[in-house]
Length: 191
Image (cartoon, rainbow, N blue to C red; front, top):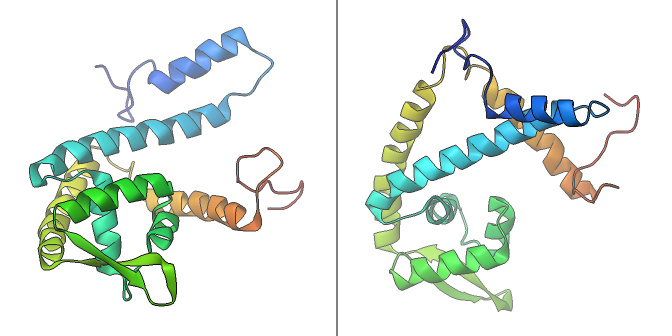
């Protein structure tokens, strides 16, 4: 694939083509947001696919590693509900992952003494050992993935993404927006 001086595909990427096609069909609309959102979605899908392929060698998916890692990092045993909130995952997905991980002997559940209707999660020795083995390998894999990016593409990216996710997460805490997205809209004139 031919690349321009900045390392981008000559003629643009898939999202550039989507924006051009939509602009041709609907010149009355601004498709700038599509350029950002669809690139974030595509990047996420590419990262998750590559990560799942890598983690398959350890018998895990990215979602399962996220669950195990969250429990490993917790000072106190988390509940499935707090885990779902932390990981921004549907409770049904968390339940499915917990069932699979428990069946494989990687974590255990006990009744929450403060609320008998819920449980608390603890890694087994095998679960803790697996996380401690996988996390350094996963970090090396992620470093290699980022190293494939053109020079300068990664610098400052974490700060810009943190600003986006912080604003969106604050919107979720404040309440649903008029658009139903769960993201708070800023009033006109607010920075």
